[in-house]
Amino acid sequence: MIERVCIVGAGTIGSLFAGHLAQVVEVSVLTRRREHAEALSAHGLRVTGRSNLHARVEASADPAELGGFDLGLICCKGTDLAAVASALHGRAEGATLMTVQNGLGAEEVVRQQGTWPLVSAITFMSGTRHSDTEVEYILDTATWLGPYRETPYATVEEIAALIESTGLKAQAFEDLRPAQWSKLVFNATVNGVAALTGLPHDPHFAAESEPTDLGRLVHALVEEGTAVAQAAGPGVADDPWEMNVLATQRGSAHRPSMLEDVEAERPTEVESINGALVREADQFGVAAPLQRALYALVRAREAAYA
Amino acid sequence: MRIAVVGCGAVGSLFAANLAQLEDVEVWAYDLDRAHVDAINADGLRLVGSGEVVGRVRATTEAGELPPCELGIVATKAMHTESAIAATAPAFVDGAVASVQNGLGNEEAIARHVPRVIRGTTFPAGKLVSPGVVQWDVRGNTTFGPFEPSPATEDQVEVLADACTRAGMPTQAAADARPAQWRKVVFNAATNPIGALTHLTHGRACERPDLRALITGLVEEGKAVAAAQGVTLDADPEAMIDHAARRDVAYDHKASMLQDVEARRATEIDYLNGAISRLGRGLAVPTPLNDAITALVKALEDSWMQS
Image 1 (tube, rainbow over the protein chains, first blue to last red):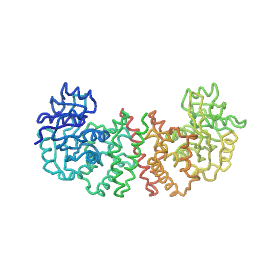
Image 2 (image 1 turned 180 degrees about the vertical axis):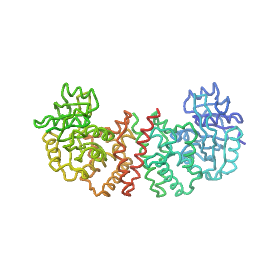
Image 3 (image 1 turned 60 degrees about the vertical axis):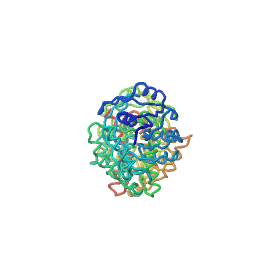
Image 4 (image 1 turned 90 degrees about the horizontal axis):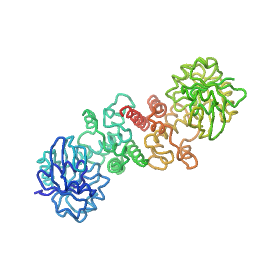
């Protein structure tokens, strides 16, 4: 039975999970900033948009202050993951941990810090954080989860059922890796191109009529990424090109996180997304020259911050 | 002898002010920047930096005011070649017109309006600091040769090269100017958009091994397209790129395309990487990296229309 859930990292995704899960289980939140934890403990967490909720949560920036829990959802950014995982070292005995990071390799980073059973997850839901205590739920798309290595599938099913019982969408997979690869190829391409061009994920990304149209490049990047996924074994579940085209037809164009990061001169997730893809390409002997160029350009763009 | 400079920005001003030092040359300048033209007519055209000269130049914003000229030098940004030469062509009916512009396709545009054309490549660089005043940043050589489909005579090429050289801008008259032009195009196409997309100076871009490898990939594609046209570069762009990256050369230089991006001005991408891609397609030479870079920079330009 999952009775106590700890949300590790209360950005947009962590806040959406915390607000919804608090309706059905006891929820604690581990934040990076102390003021954030104090605000949550004092005022609770409000979810607006597709849900209208107000949740009481126990929050702290110090892992030593948190009580025990059965399930930890690790929702921090990939760039913070190593620090977060080492803060959990020696704690949360008996808990199952679920990683929700973009890119590849989050499970291995957490595994280095303890023997918890791990569940892999990727989420397609989105929202906007309006303050430390308010998050707007925007896209009600699903979170997909699957077992990491020896974790029993029954554990995954139980977590998926728990998430669904809160009104969020979830789907359990016996093997999540093809879906992870779909999202990795999609993210590496769309995030990288958006960060360099300043364009939100708009119809430029699907335009292919002229030789220099951006969709031609996006398509070629997706094909390279898919070839890496196939060489690495899992292949892709959904075709990332189709995912791209569909996403550009939604009306209001999404601003990928890497674009927002570059505009605010914040560190991006380029290492865990584009870097992960290129390292897999190297390991499996796939050339991927365009993905390699995109990775080099985004890394360099970050190096040019003032 | 009369020489008209068409497009009197930084590079055009270097030619105009230096040529105006010669006793036997009368220099005219055509430019649309009214304040610049007025300042030139009032106080002369002043160069500062690598050379300090003031040239007496007759400047105008009206193409119709240009008298018949023996020689023309077009120095506009590549996207303005067509309109500038269309306006000024009557002055060159009996003369020859050279391009000293960036990229590919300028001579073709000039040849649509005047009968005798000179292919040119120039390395000096500078920037306009105020009306009538240009900072001369970099000295360098110029190469002129006949534009093959509508060639100027050997004499015309030599007269222009000789005048520039006497004026303090070392210039070579070549039977074939394409090897020099392609060297500069390949250099620019491999480095300019990298600065534009990453915001790094030339030196900082070159010290990142993964980015330097991308630059090499772009150089290789450019050389392959040149080779498919029968052009062998007259020097190795890789050596030029490494030389420019030295701290005492151009480590801190921001590529002109990066300056365009920072000012949100249209770039010359269509005449550099875009031209390499287009020619490559026609010659069945694959140019995937130049295609990618072209698409990225054009998309970046498009993003400015949205905000």
